[in-house]
Image (cartoon, rainbow, N blue to C red):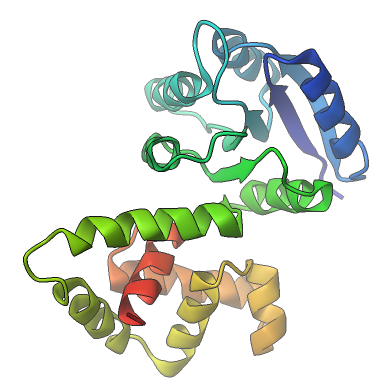
Length: 227
């Protein structure tokens, strides 16, 4: 069994201890280090090479969003692999969500997320998926929909989304709807009687056909089409 190496980043020592205890319950997860601010997180990630970073947003000095940007930029310069980054915070404002995702975060969870969900989120992003808690996904979709509602042609986004979904095969559409509901590849495979590898192949084709860059954008298209 491959062990997922995790770096925990939070300026509150008690939170770091609590998260480390939660992660310790996962036999396939190992906490390889901790950091109390963004600058220390960037240094630790460079030194420890974790698979996943749990990144707090509000910290002294370099905050979590700036650290996320720095990690991505460093990876581009070095041409290596950047760890998957899950932003874990008490702050769920649209601004934080949108900025974190624009900067390349793989997931966004609230600190009151149940321990089991945090463990599953780490496993999902380590496997190459994106992870947003249902509450965060709802806020993100609402943010996008509110933005389109301000345009002169309110129906245009829904029309475009329906046309985009019409380009999918029936099976691809089923997978897209499941992605839109926030289901993981494993959950989709179980529901549709497909292997996880097959689901991944379908998701890749859907991303290409819908001209989306990640699963969140698929969810937005699905939501728009249902308006």
